[in-house]
Length: 95
Picture (cartoon, rainbow, N blue to C red):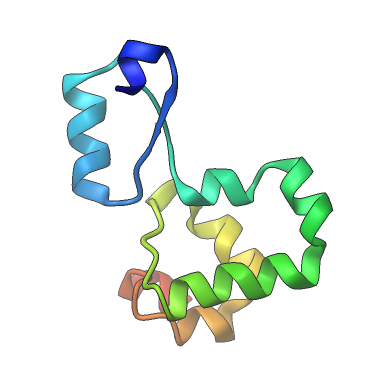
């Protein structure tokens, strides 16, 4: 549908993201973290609420994070909080 309407597909699941990149190179892809990284959203939420929202999405909804966003997530929520998020890859949780 995103290709048909010229939009962006929002995909968090790593395998689906990879398959779309390989099979549909013209498809514009984003993840939930890309949405959280939007300056307008960050300004609207503020740093404290953004940190809480992302942490809760990781901890309670087990939101997946694509590898290229790991540094941003850890910088936002902190390494101690990241260590408690089983949805983050083990190597990220131990940094």
